[in-house]
Amino acid sequence: MNSGTPLPVFRNYLLSSPQFDTITAMKPETKKIIQILLPLIVLTGGVVLLLQHLPSTAPAPTPSSTPTLTATPKSLPTGTPTTKPSPTATAEPSVMPTAVPEVPAVAYPVGPENYPPGINPLNGLMVEDTESLKLPPALLSISNSPVTARPQAGLSWAPLIYEMFIGAGNSRFLTIFYGDLPKTPDTDNPEIGPIRSGRLAYEHVRKLLNGFIVMAYASDWVFPSLNYFHNLQTEHPDDINGGRLRVFDLIDLKRSYLQELGEPNPIGLVFDPTVPAGGKDGQTVWLPYAYVDQIWWHYDEDSGTYHRWQDRENGKDYTEQVDSLTDEPLEIENVVVIFVDHIAYRETLIDLTLLYTNRERALLFRDGQVFEGYWTTKGEEYEKTTGRLRPLRFLDKNGDPFPLKPGQTWVEIVTQETPVYETEYTEDYYRLVNNKQPGSGIWVVRFVHPENIQPNQ
Image 1: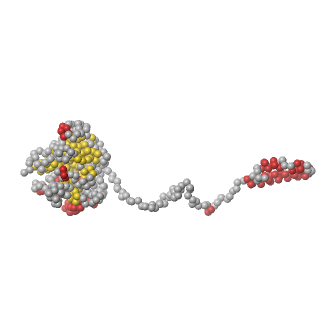
Image 2: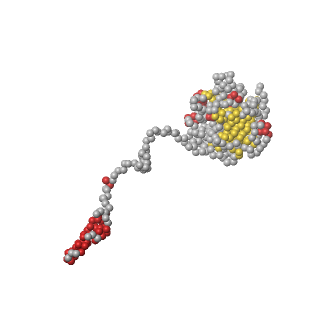
Image 3: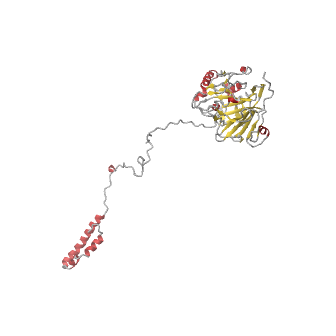
C-alpha cells in the first residue's frame, strides 16, 4: 500500500476486507478484546501516517553559518554591480580624462571702480594672462586708407578702438592693445598693422589711458604735441602699408614704457551682459565720413555683435571687414557714436576736444538696440587723489554709468553738427541722405566736416 494514502481510506480498507468476517464469528470474550484493540491499532497506524506527511523542518542556521553569495545574477551582464556602490568606493578608469581648466564665473556687472581679478577693465572679459594687465596700454595708429590697407591685422584683439576723421575724406583707427595680444594657431608672434602716422588727438587719448603711442612718423605740426610714442621704422619704406609691428616687439615696448609710465589702472567703464531698459531698435548704422568712406554696421543676432561693412573708396562695392589674422569678420559688441568738438587747423591737421569734458552727447548701440546717453572725461575724486586720468566713460540719460556689453567697443567720433535720424534700408546714397523713416531701426549718422578747414601749406 502506498505510504502516501490518506488515513480515512486506510480505515475503510480494513472494514471492507474478508478478514473482517472472521473476526465477527469469534467468541464473545475474544471479540470484546479485539474490539478494544482494533481502534488502538487503527489510531496508531493513523498517527504513523500523519507523521510521515508532516513537512520536514531544520534548525535555523546560526549567523556563523550564513553562506556568502558570490554568483552574479544571470539577468545582468558580467561586471554589472548588483547593488549601489558605497560613496567611498571609486573605480579607476582605464584612461584618465583630460583635465579641463575651470574658468571662474564672473559676477556682473563689473566696474566702474572695482573689477574681479583677471578682468580686463577695458572690455569686461577675463584675460588668459593676468600679468598682461600690469603692462601699459599701447595705442597703435592703424590705417584704413587706401583700400589696400584692408583687411587690417589684429583688430579682433583690441578691447577698444577709436575711429576719427583725419581729413581728405579719410578716417583712421587708434587701436588700443591692452591685456591679451594677437596670436594665431601658427604663431604667437604675428604682425599687427598696417601702422601709419600719428595725429594730434592721439595725445589726449594717450593721457586718458596712461599709455604710449606706436606710429609710423608724424608731421612737423604733430610731433611736438605727442609724448611717450614709438616711431616705427618700417622695413619697406616704399610700401604705404609696410608698417607692421610683431607682437613680441610690442611686448618689449610695453615693458620698456612700464618703467616710465608705471602700472596702469584704466578703470571707469561698466560691463554687464544684461540689456538695459529704454532702448530703441538699433539694428543698423550708416556712417559716411565721406562719399568714398562709407561705413555700415549691421547687427548679427547669431553672434550678438555688430559686423562692419565699408565701400571700396568708390561709394559702392561694400565689403565685410575681417581680421587678416583670422579671416573672420570683425565682431564688435558695442558701437558708440560720440559727438566731439573738432578743431581744424588745416585740411589734415585736426584736433579733438576730449579732455576734462563734463558730458556730451553719445549714441550707444548694443544687442541690436540704441540708447541715448553721454560721454565724459570729467575730473572727479579719482583724478584729484591720484593725479591720473581715467578712460573716456559713458553715461545713460540719467547721468549714471552706462553698462556696455562685455567685449569690444568701437567708438566712432563725429562732429557736434552731425545729424542723426532713421532712414529706409537702401544702398542708394541720395535716398539714404534725404529720406527719413522714423522707427525703421536704420540709423543715419551723416558726418559733417569740421568748419574752417584751411588747405595744407
